Length: 241
Image 1: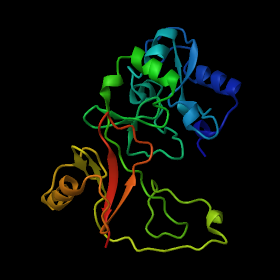
Image 2 (image 1 turned 90 degrees about the vertical axis):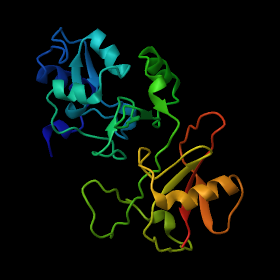
Image 3 (image 1 turned 180 degrees about the vertical axis):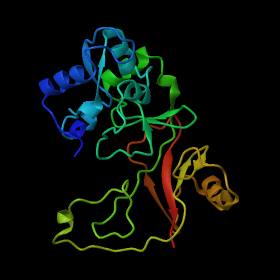
């Protein structure tokens, strides 16, 4: 295991980060005042006290990092963190801000699990970035069974099947297809920045004709963790086969 990926106590984290960075702010060179968590420690199940998740910063730069005016990538680069550590539910091919909000390629952000926290709302408001957030949501990735084949390093597994013991289990076969997320005024695939495709014309017709009405040929579920804009409802829909 990488030394920077060893879980530390709070004091050892602070001392280790300062020692690695020479007790100077990695961003401006001023004397370091805080050992900043690159990703918020509440996103980690174990507190996130890892050297690979810390950077020495001065007071002013610390505030800018908390406001997400300075990006996670900029902090890591300044602290020479080339092997970052992430919370277990986050992905290496995805960009996040300090609070775990997803940063899209176009600069917009999608609300993460801490977005509605009062303290997070306050600091993001102070940074003037709340207008960067879109009401669009990205349907989460499906976790794999422990014996799933052809897994990649970034895939996630269901760690325990104990919850299914003693219960009736219905197994269905997943057919090839596209996860479609529908709003009252928009439609996209799993990626919110996906381009339109002619194959979605039928789904758009369904949306316009039967918005809000049950349909026996489809399965609809409310997207978890969504924060839709006023007047907009979001449904994740898969064609049943």
